[in-house]
Length: 396
Image 1 (cartoon, rainbow, N blue to C red):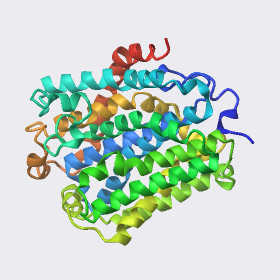
Image 2: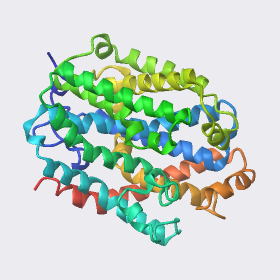
Image 3: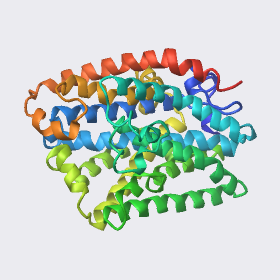
Image 4: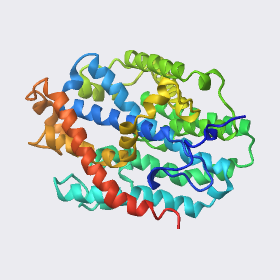
């Protein structure tokens, strides 16, 4: 059978060491644009939070739902791209080399951003006795540090845990057949969903749902697609009709907006999350989220260049945004806060409701453009002068 890697010329050469796969493994170039979509959705979400536009009915719900998908899409992409070499090539089975690549990818840019932002404008918590939590991705595991430092980097804590756990999973399942691997991943996804449901019902602490325990559902989804891809299996009509995939993703997204029904914007959502959620709502949310993420990803795995999804993902500016997406993710939250809430940019919880009312409704598009432009400029510099020199050392 034909795999996604069989498209001649499209997977051979990476435009940058940032997106180069391990030696002997194919590249999936359309994933670059998926990273761009993920970081763009998160950036728009946070700008809407800061300007107060998230409080507007329907548009706030739509942006909030899309924004919450951004980190989960990153998890699915990591699950696919990092797991596939372990099952498709013996070259990637060197744990030390794998960990070296991961460290060079995430540490330099993160440590720089964390230190610079702690010096100015002075993000909270970094230069305290808890400094080690922020520098070594442990802030997620304490309620005292969870939203301090760079708030969005709770996802990096989850990613790093996944990086460390992946070689153990690959070792434990290496002798399983394709079907056996898929069954094991289905069990992992079900376990993660159970943790999220338990947290939603207040049976366990919500911190468990935010950790790898709860987020394993989304990594397992990407890993399952990696198993199917590496086995040379094409998922029938889904691969042949990528337009239907994205149409289905749109339907799942709209259904999620209705199911979540997030009143009163971001702050109303925070209050809603603190309540015990009904089982049907939790299960519907998980099912629709998984369906949405899978349908978004399929056209990027099984490439059909003439189809609309692939043509959108081949758009150069979107791919470029994906290339520098790590820097955009690290810097955009503070950039948005400085541009929109200059009076107290790092006291978001206290300042938000008060300052939101002073921002004209028409200012949101301007704030969005400025935040995107400034974040991309900083991210491009970070990529060129910090990330790239280290990325070139991934392969000795």
